[in-house]
Length: 89
Image 1 (tube, one colour):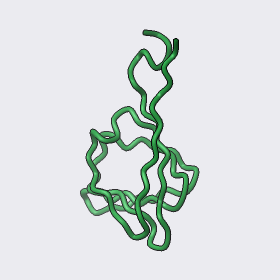
Image 2: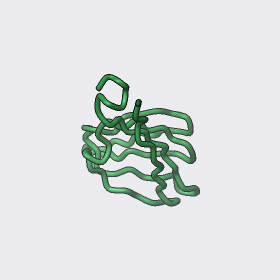
Image 3: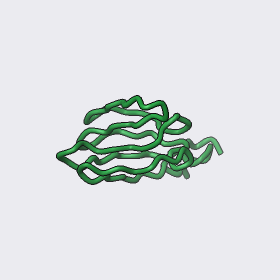
Image 4: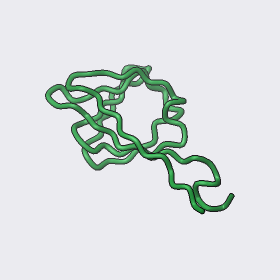
């Protein structure tokens, strides 16, 4: 039997912020489903991602994830659960 990857959603309220912890995003593909995602880097840079854009967040030099100012941001996430998830183990 093949086990499917774990899927979940993360919502950041309008003008909200979620502090970044790399381990929260290990082995996770993230797609912006709604709103705009702003990544706040340690060096002060800010990167923006819009609806439909995929990204990986693990291991990045980030301080926080922020939503757009007027709307909440929803991220769809799929996490790989090891070799068994792809049917090889």
